[in-house]
Image 1 (tube, rainbow, N blue to C red):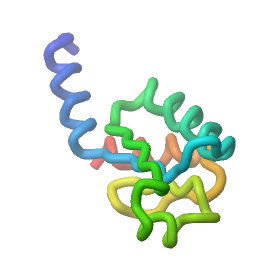
Image 2 (image 1 turned 90 degrees about the vertical axis):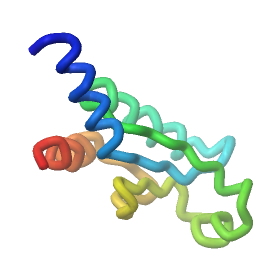
Image 3 (image 1 turned 120 degrees about the vertical axis):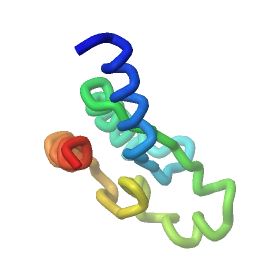
Length: 97
């Protein structure tokens, strides 16, 4: 596969797979989840966004004691802990569709 094709393929996957972590500063479970997600991201391309719930009272109310909460393409996928193998399987399924 040419580098240009691989890069365009990765760009497409980045635009198709969005992972959001609802988090707050100083949350060690959130830091752990982000590390796991970044390890998977090093193998499979996707967009990653970390959202600080402290910046929005509605998010604070919704997720306050449940963080980290991880969504994949708008669907809740994990809470408190991210299992690396399970995340990789979820991302692989999206790569194949």
